[in-house]
Image 1 (cartoon, each protein chain N blue to C red):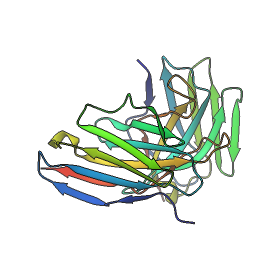
Image 2 (cartoon, chains in turn green, cyan):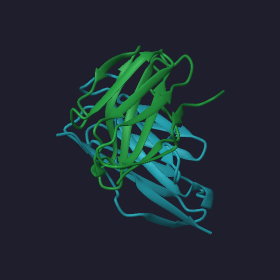
Image 3 (cartoon, one colour):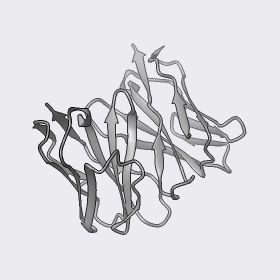
Image 4 (cartoon, chains in turn blue, orange):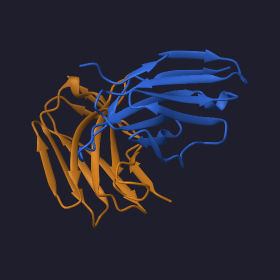
Length: 114
Length: 114
């Protein structure tokens, strides 16, 4: 079975540009999470969805960040405009229904904003 | 605010010994606690889950304890092997923000030497 698929694997962009990160969760999973990982702050939860509905977005740093989940098989995290301090590894994770709380992570997107 | 603390310094042990990692938390009442393993350049991988009403969980060479009074979890790897070298993350869930919301500690890096 394919795991959580994220794209791109690496993204290098210049300050001020729009960045869109993509995630395809595991088929049948109904919860999706976006995390950001840096050396200084560790793994931070940005937002999570349940059945395509955003449940908690309190971790989204500011209005420059937005996330969508138009259907059960796709989600995006957009940063507009990007800033150097957004440089991090962004992970998407999904989990199945039925009270099984463990998360399945993708390989992450390494974002560098110059 | 909620805080999760793991040993920030790397843990170095000899092959065959038992590795013990600590996870302490404050200002949080989790319904469950999880441990993940993360290798460089990869997403975290789920290892074990323990619920608030459980004291101990085992899986092969892994053992997790959960003390809700001390607000602490201990993660043990017995008969450690060099292949166990990785960063280990603890995560708390089921508190405020929704049952599926999972908050991670910064992780402890384990190095097992032959």
